[in-house]
Length: 85
Image 1: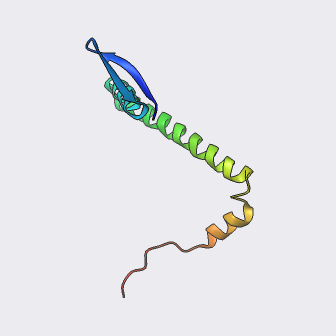
Image 2 (image 1 turned 120 degrees about the vertical axis):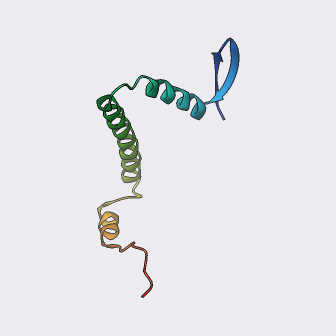
């Protein structure tokens, strides 16, 4: 696992990237003052994760794991939880 090193209150600390990301998010959240700013942050995060998902889907498409035939199969599947009668 990779780590980054930061200094908090004059104390050096070793953080994993996920912990560093959490600190960055906390810093960003602390600057939110209005509902509009919160909406903008949510939109930004949504776009970020959508781009990551699209990148992974493109990889699947490029290596042949995903294709139009498989998409058509997925579209026809019924994945609901069966209910008791």
